[in-house]
Length: 351
Ligand code: ATP
Ligand code: MG
Image 1: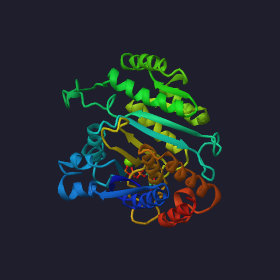
Image 2: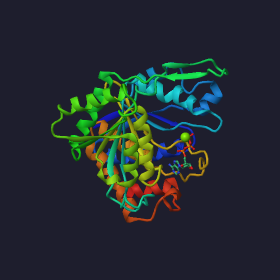
Image 3: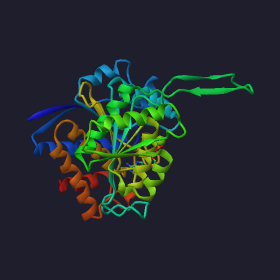
Image 4: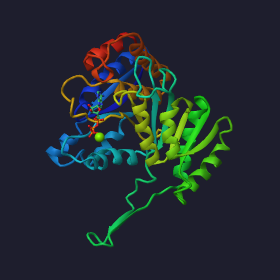
């Protein structure tokens, strides 16, 4: 029996409703695959920020460090600005634990309606790989002459050879395990220093992954193709900003933001990786018990894969596909009437 220590950060709103659902699934699938979990739950959240003035304690990273992985629900609270939860919790964890890859798989499941006519069920199945710690989201820059007519703002983007290479290698390796196609998001016609550098590194790394065919698209055209023909993609890799935008767009294409998962990976395993649904705390439905748990459950499946249990992970995604294709049990965001608990129970029955 393999045991993994899992840090749970349910967070705020529906985060506290979907994490227990994911935990039920982990325990059930683990029992069948000889894997057990020891959980420790942390109440770090915007609610904590309002109570105690900080999202997490000062030694928060040290406490997380003892775990094999982190499962996060969602953080966000009406009246607490997004930058508080971002810079008070998510970014310190991503950077502190060198989670330099953000992976977001996209599938249009049978039984789920995509807003796109071009996306028949089963036909869309790709992964967005986002650079997660450098790029456009740097703190370098400043504001000058505030309030004067000469007022200006400058923000620098930071791309390092090592930082770009490692996320590209992850993306090429992932593509080799999948359909063998990689698309790089660029904008080297308009952004004349960082993006040509990115393009050069893509071409260089491609030479180390001869089994993968690759191309590049400008971000504007690529966004249009996500909508017009999402079936063409296998692995799409982008910088921090481009990957952020593309992965939210892709989650919308897949039919409900309630399904989309994300993994913040430290591929070397030197530090715990963090798994979280793409959706936020959804204050509008929090407390009603009707949140779609699939984003959290799929995130837990990615965690199983990362911890070395790919068959268990596939069991979970197969059960998700089965419950959506073969039953009408689903939460209201997918047009059903089931509660989070009923939907989870139905999924467990298909496991
Ligand atoms: P936050 O500030 O935490 O990011 P938000 O309201 O900006 O919250 P989401 O929480 O992602 O963003 O919610 C966007 C919309 O999608 C809301 O109407 C919410 O109810 C819905 N939604 C998000 N996640 C789910 C889910 N798991 N199940 C059902 N509906 C969801
Ligand atoms: Mg939000």
